[in-house]
Image 1 (cartoon, rainbow, N blue to C red):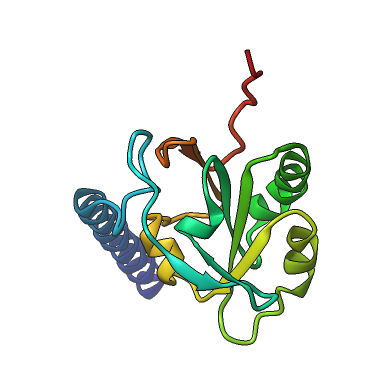
Image 2: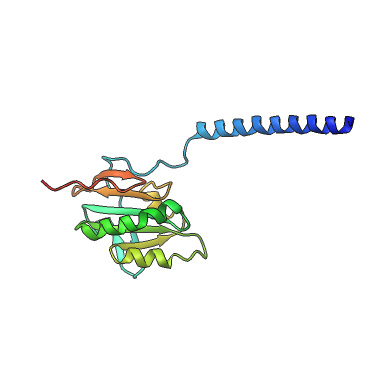
Length: 167
């Protein structure tokens, strides 16, 4: 019986130590902040970029033009799956340039995403934190950025912005 009591006390002490270490780790991570900003901020200029689309066409900041709708999606991301049909629908209704970037790890099959997006957008696939994601300061998925005719970011976030009616 003494051994059982000692084992329970030891287990309780180990659990408390684990809890304290976890709290310390969480505090340290919060102090360090995110590794990258969470997308371009409104008012920033669209960055210069160049890439090749999945259909073999070159795309760049000059070729995309402005205004533009830019979406970043990741394979296996549930919020991306939820936003994708809404992004495609918005892209169908806009006359703006539309660019979709799909982040995928080695061996991940993103064919379904690419096919859906290719109907309405120029599509680029790249590894996580690829050159376009770094240029647009994307650190979470999905991220949607709208750019005005002056090549300035109007909105950036993880959902589609509200549509603005033309005057």
